Image 1 (cartoon, helix red, strand yellow):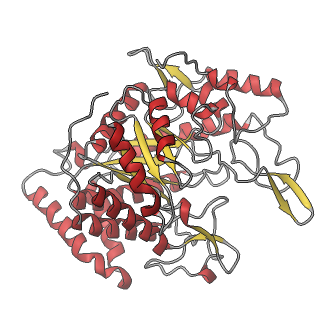
Image 2 (cartoon, one colour):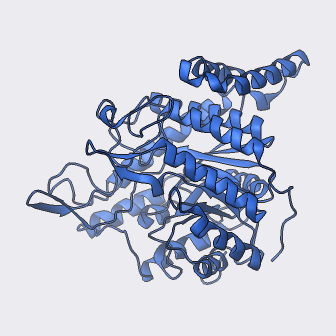
Image 3 (cartoon, helix red, strand yellow):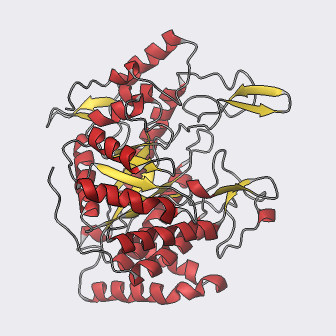
Length: 458
């Protein structure tokens, strides 16, 4: 356990992006009830993810992380969970074939309910109300009653997360993840006129699977071809919820964040002496750190020492998010600072958050070409710096939405209104997600990342 740490220690630290609950008695009752519920994830699963992320750290595996910007109570259903899971696995097949490395599959799901806000208040006309902070805290409707933080919403978030994880375990272990079935669905994507340029790669994957079958190494004989390990992640923003679900691992005696396999600290909450960093430094889960333009190399080094003083592999995931055209201005210095202190980290690129714009039609959107451009810059910088570009992080959905423009689906500014379903940030749709996987596969096949390395000891 981290020195001088307790799961409630964050309460004495400066905190930002936290709701001010007016009913403290109700808040205490909900926290007590949550603390008596079973954890959503288990210590053995957390240790397994750390082992897989250690392989990413050494350049032996690749990470694919994706899912909703923010989960919704209203839109929750089994089909949406299944469709997002399916698209992530289809993307993983393409990336596995190209990178010649196993792909660690990590969803932004089963806990991604709270959202940081750039402003405390939202103004519409002459009315000013507290900002919507995600379904786990308050409601999106623009009226005073809806915007009051309500502790009971944490119980609904727990219930939905438990149901989501139950579905994901069934999908990942029950045969739905069969690699042949998933690739057959991907082939349907490449039959479209605009996507035919990806047929060559699809055909090569088909040939590889045919060879595996001919050699007698099919799904019935090899469980790994029909079952996958799938993990959950979310931003550890609402610390009342995180503390209530924190548990002690009976095997190691160490604390585990029972809300998700990996939790991350956002760009707005990574103050080294703040509440969010204090909570995350004590749990044994892998911890993600969002690295935006405001993060200096020296601040990153302080965070790494605070969150991973023993310099363990598989503990820290650095998620860069700068925006297209800005990666080379910021990322090289961060990579060099990590090298200089010999820190064991896995690198990941979030090409979504730095590329949000307002369209001419008034909708918040992201342009496919900008997302692709930031990914290309991320790969090129790591290649030039001799470091391993270990993964990618997308806000996406398995639905056929029209929220991001561009790609073979040719979503335009005028199309955004057709199926703009997000109540937070715009997401890639299923077609755009698959296209990005193909484009990323092409670029990765042209790069020559460093050979897998041994861990650097503290």
